[in-house]
Image 1 (cartoon, chains in turn green, red):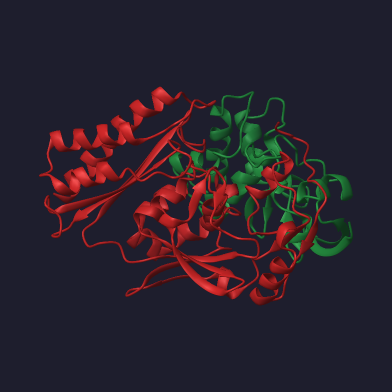
Image 2: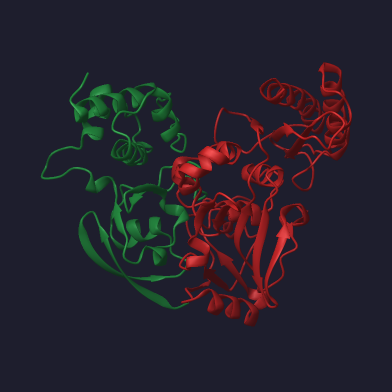
Length: 159
Length: 296
């Protein structure tokens, strides 16, 4: 199987990677770029543990081939905090106590970041619908939803 | 059966420069190549060992497959590379085809819908495909590019069995066209699942009802049931009952029972055949009644 050389941006840094056709974006991030924050849960696009932003939109990275990412901008959980400042979705989740084992957390944060980028004032149903594809076995979701509500309030400056 | 290792079996990735190049490649490598767009069904089937193409041909880059347009005379065109979220966000889709948007929103999750496509949902040909029922009742037709050039196929002629369609090696489905819906039509999608959102349906019904002066009842209902037969299922006798008899509670009940008797569901992890049949009756009754209240 031949290798494809792709150029893309990951967490605001340009990268050039040689990948086989059958390598997913998830595998490339974890195995070629040592960005292990993004997790493999199901390899079927159902659990959301592998969620990253691709050109600003949440995708299941297990369902994207690395070769499809030529020219793409990818943001993983490692790219949320900037200049040593946590992203509001991270701070909100911490403040709400919405992390237990932490395995779903990177995917939750990315889905939340994607939601607030496209809808800064989501209502309860919109938050829930945005997180349908991020499964959590620990928390029962309550505090995760609370964390996203807090993040929305922080960002929009309203309460 | 299900392999949760993130890797895919080996294959070669082909990104043709044009639709003509794609079609030529698929014809020349007919038995060992497949087109793909979002890949959200293809990759899963490859991981499960159900598909093993030597070549995957990326059809996302062409104007023809990226098209998403509405014309007030001819209707809606959705290209094969258009992710479901783009359709959901398209103002004319929500305004003119709310039933289609309702079914698309019930698929999987937001992040999956950024990759999954309606054409892919159709070509995967699962009887549970959520958007298929809406496309059937909205009288969709597929534009297919194959060895003989372009051809149009009504969606009703497309499905042969679970995962099987009339597509031949070398074919690429370019787009689906939905004509304008009938005037004053109302539609509804009822998806019964093990959870509120995202699961595959146990049973689902996409229904459209509208005034029709050519029928005895003065109305016509188009119905498409998911997960109750080897293919997305149109209960023709139920439709005939609603067209041929004055519509009231008894007619609707008769149609619901006819739909129940017509389906051939199986037992599987999501439900038993018996449960599915009973739910077909109840859901048909409920959905047709709701639409009737809107259009009468």
